[in-house]
Image (cartoon, rainbow, N blue to C red; front, side):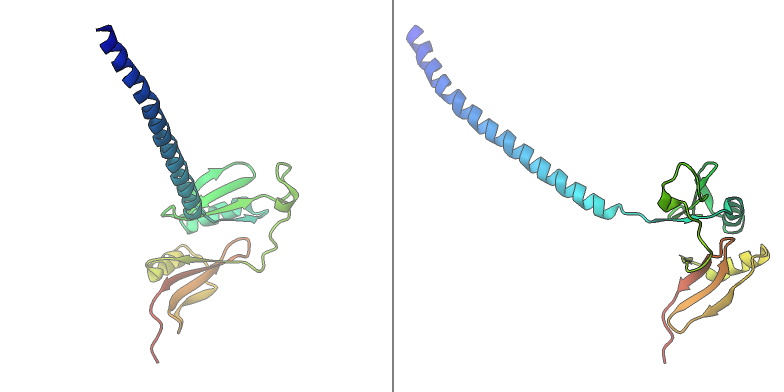
Length: 176
């Protein structure tokens, strides 16, 4: 019996190292595949998660907040005494405003926007409906509603900072 046990033991002993080596290779391969897959997902997710949040430095923070929230129905995502982050009514896009020369901000975020050289385009489903709503709220129209030969139906207004805002519904261009 002792010999039988010893012979089985020696067969088991020779089997264990081989099994251990195979398992070690399987575990290492699994870890490697997992880390490569995780790296690919990380790179892919970085590409897909880029989001633009335009920011305007302005001394007219209160007027800007009132205009965007009361006239354009933007919501407030975040606000403090020198910064406000607003979002479009459907919460798809954000726009921020910052007081100039705030001690918490670095020099690149100090100088105020001078009211020239910037515009926003906001695509909407029903440009005529929005046009009428803004007219009823007393918003001055910089460009009255119209159709363009390239397919835009749009109108434009100006915010308290001098930023032109073009509201547009894209349509097929006119045929000649």
